[in-house]
Length: 114
Length: 115
Image (cartoon, rainbow over all chains, first blue to last red; front, side, top):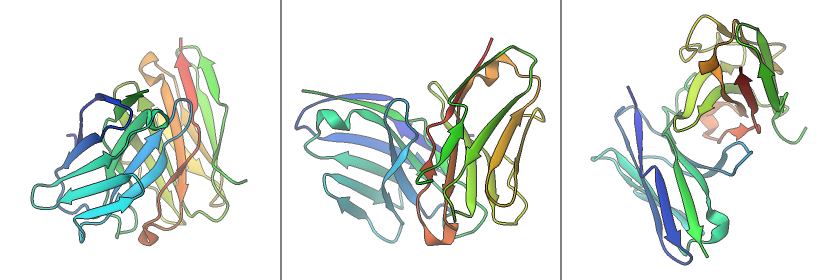
C-alpha cells in the first residue's frame, strides 16, 4: 500500500518557469509534510515543510500548497533555475507523535533547461 | 562530526555473503533511521531508533535484515545471505526528537551491489 503518491515521475521545465510537483496521501493521521531535495551522489536534504494548520508556506522561490480536505499537497518552484535540477521527494508522517518515521513518495526528477 | 557519516560508500559483495553497513549520526541526535533507495522506488523505510525505546522494525523486508544501535550513537545495518534484489543505496538519517518537528539529516549512503 503506497501511502504517499507523487507525480509526475519526471519533469522538464525551462529556466525561469514554474515547476509543480504534486503529492497525495491516504492516512488522515499524518500531520507533517516535508519536501526533500536530492542531488546525485548525495543524501536527500530538507527543503521546506508544512503542518496542516496552514494552507500555504513560502520560503524564497519554494512554496508548499496544502489542501487538507483533498489530502493533497504540492511544491511550487518559481523562477526555476538549472541549479534546481535534482530529485524531489514529498513525505508525510504523524510528526507530533514519537516513534514514527517519514513515509516518502517515489520522487520526481526535475530538469531545468538553460 | 558535522554531518551523518556512512561507511563504506560503496560495497560489492557476492550473492549469499553477509554485509554490514555503518552509520555515525550527528552527535546529540536521538533518532536514527535507515532507508533503502532503489531506482524508481523512492525511499523505503527500514527501521527507526529513538533513544532507549524499542526500535520500529516494521519496514525490514525480511529476517535477513537486522540493525542495532550501540550506546545511542553508531548504528549497523546487517544483511545476511545477500540477494541480488538487495542491491540499492542504503541511506541513514538522524534527527532530534520528533516532537520538535525538525527534519532529518541524511548521510550520502552506501551503494550496495550484489553480484
